[in-house]
Length: 378
Image (cartoon, rainbow, N blue to C red; front, side):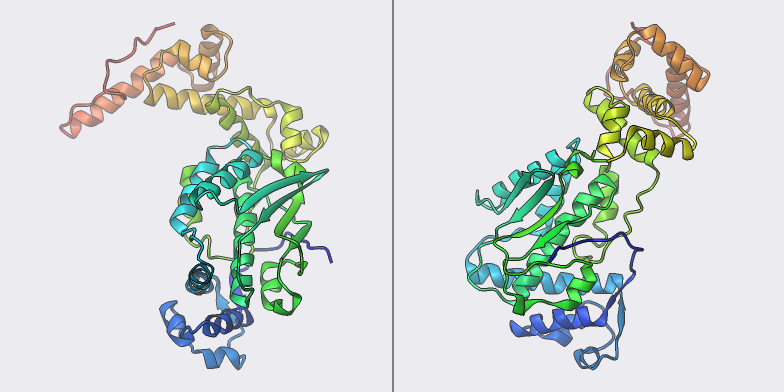
């Protein structure tokens, strides 16, 4: 049986049967189901859920109950198996390390290394690439295999799947999901909820997807991470990836390259990143009312403006940062973008900031607290 994931509208509720599956596993390890529901904000009790009187629950409410349940299952398993935990605070740090990577491949490799160090050098994650398929393997040593353990594993695999898609801004379609659990533990409610069909009795817990996805650029920023953790990682519902405009994703890849001082990706490289032919890539940008040249210039302008406003770099250094061959060409381009020379633009920004500071009775200092750079430095 092959596992597939499908692009679908975002869901804002979870079926009551999924809550019941969590409740059953929670109470099987001695938990108080009614108390857990109350702590999660539910207005009804276990009896109402089991009698089928609650068909759907709000997405945010389900996420809070998933948090209560999954953390309890994980704590129970860690104590039973005498293995270290991987707390949510470390997941946040793991996400921060992945944000600094240019591509999904490097982000996954970084996550694997971070996880190994965090788990006392025990390698629980691995990436295998064979032919056109990439597989993330998850090896968590367990003494038993209960429904609670299964749900923690499904949650873990789903967390990585959602995270990889979020980092690149595009849904990653899974070709295979393997679970090293007996089929008798299968939870249909969670298969439906996660929109996955899993292969039980597999050698490893794993998710597989097209290897071409590994070359996708990481487009998210630190600011995006703050919004992600509103419900993540306990929101197990399929997200609304909101694939957005291709121009936005291409711009993110170009900005990332400029900030890392790498070569700006060209048409061929960007087309491969997004799994498109060059003709389709051009056609989609045209349909969005833009072109690769316009996107590249917009990225250069954005970074140049930011550096002029916030840094002590000279005009020559800024020209080099945004990959102009010489300062004169940069000056002409900047004047075309803004109607001012870089020097005039910087002087006006500094003067305005000083006026605002004087109105507030404060003395403005130049970024970096050092002397102002020479505006005509070359």
